[in-house]
Amino acid sequence: MKPITEYQDYRCYMQDYYDERKRVSAFSWREFARAAGFASPTYLKLVCDGKSRLSAAGAENVGSAMGLAGFELEYFKNMVVYRHAKTDREKKAAYESMIELARNYKMKVVDGEAFKYFESWVHPVVRELAPVMPGATPGEIARRCCQRVTGESIRESLEFMVKVGLLKKEGNAYVQTDKYLKGSSEVMPVALRSMHGEMARFAEEAIERFLPSERNFTGLTMGVSGEAYDKILAELEACRKRIVQIALDSRKVERVYRLNLQLFPLTWGEDKDNEQENS
Image (cartoon, rainbow, N blue to C red):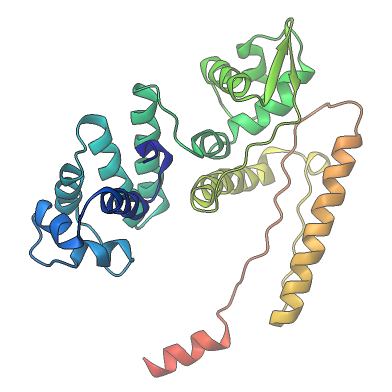
């Protein structure tokens, strides 16, 4: 089997464990369930099929039945918490615990680097700012940031991005590479929602914090159909790509900006009205 840190879904890990045992022996779901202390012979199969779930106590028992101990058992239990977390805050905390456990034992979590990069505003800003400040100390870079951040945080960000290949150091300067971090659709939404939330708060502060000549806020309230909504999304994506190209063609970076493209509903759809009438 793959190392446990290559999994984010505890059900996939359980299924792979079962398949491996089954491949070399007469292992059965009944035997698996009995070893984990469950009376139902099919309970763990239902869990793996997504038709049931493990509790915290069940995670402990199943992990032990699979021979997990120490950090691997803790990692498995955090996978269960991560999978069933009800809020992004809980999900993020569980995933960060998984990353920390792996780091302490010098192992790597798949998608861990991408998760770390996208969960905070610091890394994307520093990646843009550091290359245009050759020879600058982390404290000097921190002072150029509009949001409060410590020099230590900047140093850690620089070291992280050099380590994962997003920046490379040439003498006393940093240079961007062509590498991009991409995570799975399973993990990235949590990190991206965290960063989008931060950026939305920064945008709200910017209304009062910066002169109109330094920022641009416009809005449009409109009624649309589902078909029109899809066309608007396509237009926004095309616009975003054109703006990216303008930024790439810019020969001199003077400031780092954030562009939020926000389109969100202000009313429920007709289906919601029907649900309310029928409730």
